[in-house]
Image 1: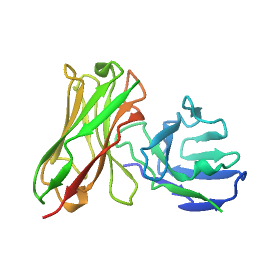
Image 2 (image 1 turned 90 degrees about the vertical axis):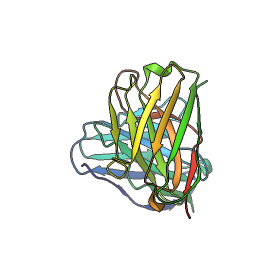
Image 3 (image 1 turned 180 degrees about the horizontal axis):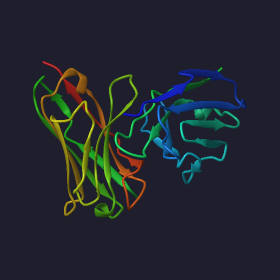
Image 4 (image 1 turned 60 degrees about the vertical axis):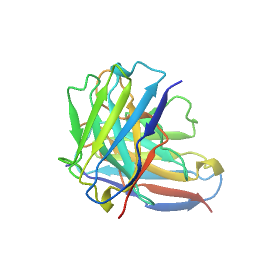
Amino acid sequence: DIQMTQSPSSLSASVGDRVTITCRASQGISNYLAWFQQKPGKVPKLLIYAASTLQSGVPSRFSGSGSGTDFTLTISSLQPEDVATYYCQKYNSAPRTFGPGTKVDIK
Amino acid sequence: EVQLVESGGGLVQPGGSLRLSCAASGFTFSSYAMHWVRQAPGKGLEYVSAISSNGGSTYHANSVKGRFTISRDNSKNTLYLQMGGLTAEDMAVYYCARDLSGTTVTTMVYWGQGTLVTVSS
């Protein structure tokens, strides 16, 4: 099975900072990569699919890039409401594995 | 408005069984694949099961294969997860989720609020 890793596991940044989270697949998955945001105590929310397509209603400060094995989620200007854990997920085939998550908070 | 409402969670003894249900509304249920995802307390998301729109194709993670069965009743707009041989490692919030695509099995766009399964004697 393809394994998904994320780095860093956690980060602390200031409001307005540019934040980058990396997701790596152990084998190529083309662009079949999604990013989810889960705020504390809340249900996961789809942010990005197909590696770079923003889900409807998601603020434009979120963006995704990458293909193959290496992917990035970028928050261009971190806001207090972005405090959450972010997960990547591969969906090219079963199992549709999630990464271990990256916890983002405000410095 | 898409709504997914899980039910059936609760306290069960180790080795016991439970059936989770997910009632769907606000979309054509029979046109979309569906998923179950779980999250143990304080842990990350774990993909559990998926089923195609017509129920003809299913997937179960290795961790639950042979113990859990995903199914659906398109006439009732309901998704199920039959769970057996439960252990402490199965204790989690179980989410049902609707697929993003109406043609293939991809990723999840709509999620229910989840139902908690507690395994304890």
